[in-house]
Amino acid sequence: MKKVAALLFISALAVLLLYVVASMPPMGDPDNPTATHVIPRYLERAEEETHTVNVVTGVILNYRGYDTMGEVTVIFCALAAVLAVLGRERRGVIHGFVDRSEVPASVIVKTMVRFMVPFIILFSVYTILHGETSPGGGFQGGAVIGGSMIIFTTIFGLYESSRRIPLKVRAPLEGAAVMGFFLVGSLGLVGGGNFLTYAWPRVAQGLHPSLVVWLTVLVEVGIGLGGAMVLTSILFAMIREEEEIAPAS
Amino acid sequence: MKMGTALNLVLILLLLTTALLAVTARDLLAAVVVFSVYSLIMALMWQRLQAPDLALTEAAVGAGVTTVLFVITIFKTRRREEE
Amino acid sequence: MAKDIVAGIFCCVGTLFFIIGTTGLLRMPDLFTRLHPSTKCDTLGACSVIVGMAVHNGWSWDLLKLAFIVCFLLLSSATCGHAIGRSALRRNIPYWKKKEANEDGHGA
Image 1 (cartoon, each protein chain N blue to C red):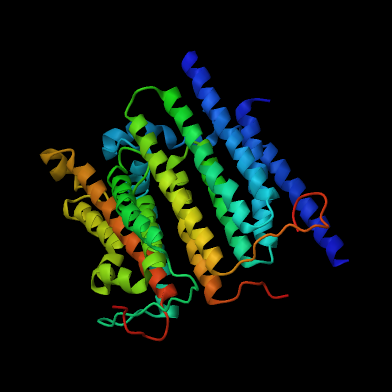
Image 2 (image 1 turned 90 degrees about the vertical axis):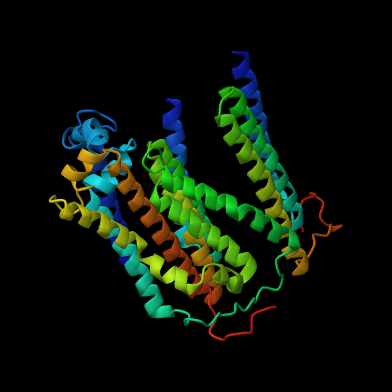
């Protein structure tokens, strides 16, 4: 009985959804409601107003800066929640990583990771810094840095990787994304504009128009560093063992 | 049928299959692997919808970072789903 | 025109290798034999497709990027295969042994 009811409900839902999908406007049609509202303004004037060649970055960081700032805060809150549950390592104490795997990583794997990680980080720096001209940006680059830290930690263990990014470096940088956004947003207030109007328009654009681009890059770097450190901290909190062992010599 | 439409259809079918497999798998490690494949196909679809920014994010976060975090969680807890 | 044909041939060869690799992955009986088609045909197939793309693209800076992709693909795929094989060997994962009673030739 229950199953029949569920089946009926799902069939009705499927019919409804298919009906709605069939009445949707075709994809990529210039007469779509989405394409006639604010999109033309974004596409026509983004480069002139935000000075970013990549319109997506212009929209994300400039037109919808509040939205992105909220997202960045959500990521920070996620880290806070993870640390509230799992706990952070204490300052000054280097936690060991109890390697429970039956097979330790071989020399070949270690050498390859040692060789690859710098290239991965180089790629992510490229992704972050070129966010305003090509696809990519802070979120993507930060995730790639986080991925490289994950590779390094799984092969070399928590001791080696937390020695390279110690807590006193990680902790201040975790808030870099929110802080970068807030500082750049406040610059708009100082210049007499609104919050998050980039580069206090009258002052900076009188001085040099490319200053806006540099502020965008600053926010991107903040998001990238912050995201990377948040991911690394979540990883360390998850992989950390309760007992502390003496570091391997 | 045009070439692009056929490719889209294949991708959507793969997406549906991997989504169903990820939900129904009893072995959680298998579910995680299938979920990472789902993310990869999703990244391809973003690229086909001309959103390379999202494709990059999906490939890095979905297929890379979350998979490892899930695997760590499984190793800290249990591999099999309870009945 | 000739460029397109050469690129197409390379891409077809790559796809063929992918098909062979996937078939091997599905049909081989145990982990060690499965590792053989999956890693080998992964590198060969992907590299052929990328060489096809490079031929199609002609001389440009994109060629350098494709060369880097090939390099990293070769390195990481080989390392991955090594890590899986070594880990399986150390964990004493059983080998596949041919059974006399099994006439159809595949699998125990």
